[in-house]
Amino acid sequence: MTDLGIKRALVIVNPASRRGAKVRDRALEAFEKAGVMCDLMVTKAPGHAAELAASNHSLYDAIFTLGGDGTLMEVLGAVAETGPPVGALAGGTANVMARTLGIPLDPRRAIPLLLAGDEARIDLGRLGNGRRFALGLGVGLDATMIELAPRGLKKRLGFFAYVIGGFRAAVPLKTFQVRLTVDGEVIERTAAAVLVTNFGAVLNDLVTFGDGIRYDDGLLNACVFSPANFWDAQRILWRLIRKDFRPTPTMLYRAGKEFRIETFPARPVQADGEILPPTPVTISVEPKLGRLLVPRKQKRA
Image (cartoon, helix red, strand yellow):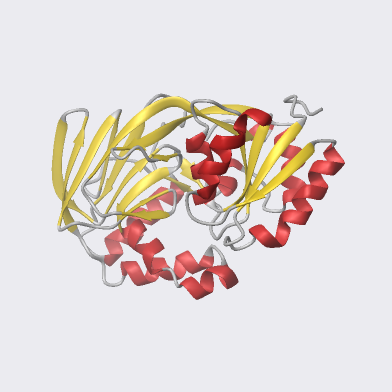
């Protein structure tokens, strides 16, 4: 038995993810070494991870996903109202959630940490169509970055394929008109990117989106970035890295529970790294609905 009382676990593997199929034997060995009975199920198509989790969750003390952020979110969303807690094992391209929570990319190190860790209750975002997200939703630049990341390089370069996509999206910098509604307040401005984020920092705190953003406060946070040119965009990124959130015309923040994003023209949308239909999009918060396994010293973002 583990510190959290996990005796039996389900591992859902996405074989299409960058590393999922390659490291699953390491994961099974780690569970065996920890004395945890483990069953493995393999996804066959997008959405299958959610089906597997929803159909089998009552048989297990925890579910682990071995894939990317999309696989994790499918499972976390599917069992949000029923449990059990979900653990993220890095098997995808970016693995933003694992990096954000300080979960090692090697499952042989990650699994003991999660089994001896804590259970965090996190807020979830919910779209108008019922789809949920945990990390955040982006419109504009970051969605285009994911969309333009070379598919062939994702398997070979992993996270750095998104860096290439970022350069392709940022040059030339494209702006748009946005109408953002937060709890009834309407904000209109020119923007290059709009984020509705649940976590204040990502990638081992490399990038911090804003001051006081927490994943368990019952709120989501809209961040609107309005660079006038490419160099403005670089200054915004530098400020985020340095955690400099002094008032500036290029950065706007609003916390709330209900959001609507309209853009003119329509722009790409991503949620937890998955490309969705373009704007408009509506979002609401579901306070502390997600149950996530985290290393003991990394409970808060």
